Amino acid sequence: MFDLKPSSRASATISAAAIVLALAAPLVVGSDANRHVLILICIYAALAQAWNILGGFTGQVSLGNAVFFGVGAYAAAVLFTKAGVSPWIGALVGMGLAIVLAVLIGYPVFRLGGHYFAIATIAIAEIALVVFINLDVVGGATGISLPLVRDAEGRPTDSLLLLQFNQSKLPYSYLALALLGVVQAVAFLIERSRPGYYLRAIKNDQTAAAAIGVPVARYKLYAMMISAACTALVGAFYAQYLLFVDPETVFALSLSVLIALVAILGGAGSLWGPILGALVLIPLSEFTRTALGGSGRAFDLVIYGLLIMLIAAFQPTGLVGLHRRFIRRRSAPSTLPPDRLAAAKGAPEAD
Image (cartoon, rainbow, N blue to C red; front, side, top):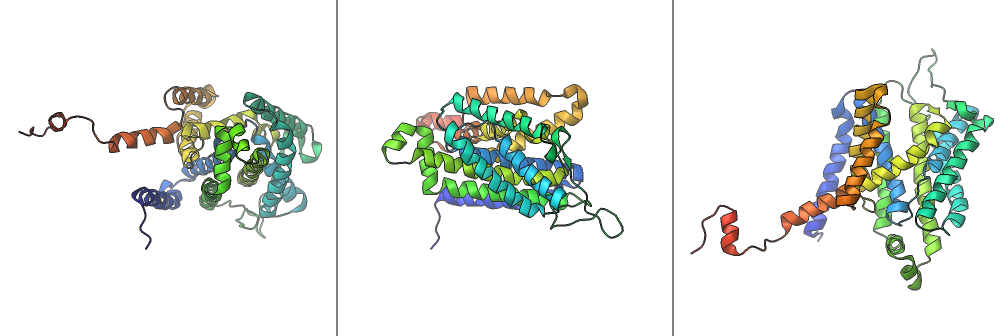
């Protein structure tokens, strides 16, 4: 009744295995230091997947997604510190603000194309950075330190409602995995739906897409709104995880660039590319930071640049494309004559 095609069965098997490995990972890695790396992988994979909806599916390369990340982080942090509002509600508020901001940004910048669009998104993110640095009501350049949740005796304690876990990073690990799962599900639904086909048509040729009746401006705006909402959601979690927010961290241009690099290295426009990119880049970044200390400042960015140049030169579709090419080579029938094929395999030639 539910007889799947071989490709569908393989995809379902891989997805099931990935889910099992993800659920087991926080327990297997053991220490909180390793769990911290796992949490960062989930955070950047989710951010890259949110970017992928706009930059990968739609072809609108944004280098300013940090502005949505910062809005989500500050919304949750300010509401929690100033009014005691649960971060869960703060995350929803941050998502709403990010959607409004995406609409305000989208209408003017979508009139631009190519690298002009990317430059415009950089300018907007830099404006947001300057505004928040000089905005005293949200802490200015100093930022905001979120208070610890304490029990009746004044000791730090855990609270799911207030999204704080001070005893272990294990709950944060599973929340980060759940967060990645939500963003991944959104991207999956978009990819397999009619809007997903519209977005890919816009990416391939906006003029042709408009000629066949696709409302180009509207669907580009939809993609930016969804990307902004997902990015703000991750920002709210990030603020509660670190318990500190400042403009130089959440609005930094380097953050926007890293988000895009993760998706591009893994394979922009593919569903699994952002996760693969995060699995490579984030542990690499943490390794260079801890191994080299202060002497290795920004060395990870040098490695990022080399990786991106190699990918651009030899495999523009990223790690996902490299994997697909390897599978095609393995599964392609040989073009050698039977006698030469048998000799290559070490078998006796046929008479």
